[in-house]
Image (cartoon, rainbow, N blue to C red):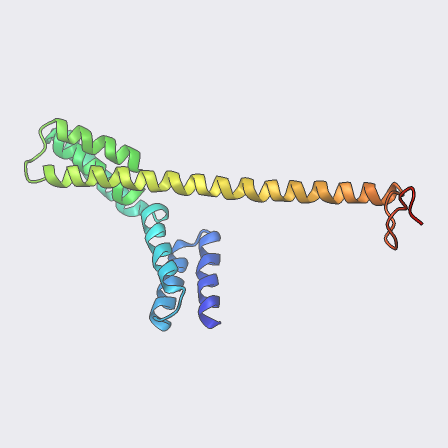
Length: 181
């Protein structure tokens, strides 16, 4: 029961947009109730928040400033594209732009030691992009299912009210059929 409340607290923080508190609540659940049935879901929520919701603006700004300095110093285009891809991937969480930058870095003069990492990160970008789209589609599906259910329920209520007020309905006895008495 207490572990359920801890899970709900994490979900509430997440809905409120406070991702740091949400992660803290989910981690607290794992630490205090390691055998809880909610631990796998808490772990999943932590992974999702870290993959899609936490953005590091301060670190991104510092990395971008350093990148601009290297552009001015006319450093290797491949290495610049790779670093920009990392900023998109790790800090901004824009996986489409990260994949594009990793692809560009691989087509120009990227250091040989970074090439395997760029291939891997490009693949990871595509995977996370796919997961993000799946999440978005699932949310839309859930919204439309709730909306459809509400509409059907409303229509049933309207129909029932109209049926009762028309006098066709008798709660105490069914209507008489010809030939029956």
